[in-house]
Amino acid sequence: EQDDPDLYVRIVDRKSDGIVVRGAKLHITGASLVHEQVVMPTKAMRPEEADYAVSFSIPTNTSGVKIINRSFAEETAVDPFDYPFSARASMPEGFVVFDDVFVPWERVFLAGETHLAGHFARALGLWERTLGLAEAVEHAEIIVGLAALVTEQQGKERKPDVQNTLAELIAYAELLRMSLDYAVRNFERTPSGMVTPNVLAVNVAKYHYAAHFHEMVRNLQDVSGGLVLTLPKKADLDHPVAGPLLRKYLHTRDGVAIEDRMRVFNGIRDLTADSYGGWQQVVALQAGGGLLAQRVMMNRTFDIEAAKHKALRAVGATIKE
Ligand SMILES: Cc1cc2nc3c(=O)[nH]c(=O)nc-3n(C[C@H](O)[C@H](O)[C@H](O)COP(=O)(O)OP(=O)(O)OC[C@H]3O[C@@H](n4cnc5c(N)ncnc54)[C@H](O)[C@@H]3O)c2cc1C
Image 1 (spheres, rainbow, N blue to C red):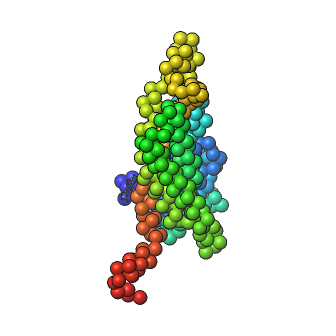
Image 2 (cartoon, protein in one colour; image 1 turned 135 degrees about the vertical axis):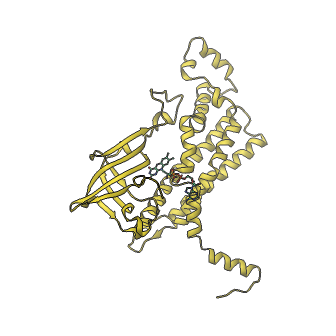
């Protein structure tokens, strides 16, 4: 329970034509870029929390909606050569405040039905995790590719250490791809006929992604070396004095263009070690819910009785039917 009842979005007034809501949603990705704010509870609600069991959709420019933006992006334009990912992937995070916002009834989905709040929260988590996984699968493969390229460009790709690291990265990426694929193929159907990805599989996949992402970043950075951070910029390569020096001292082997080598290092830095890279590391953990959220869902949806039954049978113990 919080000191200030407004901290979680709640209904503060009920009128004949709608409700008035107050509260804040602290981390809404892209809130200021979209036409509608769709609001829902992020947890199940107890009967005494009826004012907090609220869901609605309103235009972003509704009176009383205030968005305070934060972005990982540089405030000035950056060269896509130096920032291959973040130069084209900026995404503002919105700290969204509902300052006594009127919502007409036709835009209200939930207003006090506490027994339904958990459904909204679980649906949000499920789809958010599924979406995050689709992107994570792509990123994981890009990480494998960057590790292969950076080591090839230095001529060390056949070294046992590098091969071991590449295998670790491949195992991570492939398990991620397989688990998302499994989750989608083994979909579930709600009583009303709505099809959703497999809940247990999505949570296992998201857990795998989040729990091991930082280890994969470490592996990539480990095989890459210090140029991840110390590589000069495109402007230096274009400079009449610095440029030729960079071309001479960044040379590794024939056939490796200096620009390509720089692009690969820039990709590694941008994706794992700079503002966007830092953002990615917290996104992996927190977006769609932290590790705890997936642990709760895995415990809730795994068939633990079947596993106990199997274990009892395996050890020859008595099975009570
Ligand atoms: C970049 C980014 C974008 C996001 N975008 C969106 C978005 O668009 N829409 C949206 O709805 N959400 C979004 N989120 C929110 C995200 O789902 C939450 O940040 C996440 O669920 C963690 O909740 P929290 O930040 O309130 O932290 P907390 O709830 O404080 O959780 C942090 C940690 O505290 C611990 N903890 C929390 N509660 C308990 C408990 N009851 N018992 C024991 N330990 C506990 C756990 O270790 C947990 O991992 C975004 C988050 C980030 C970082």
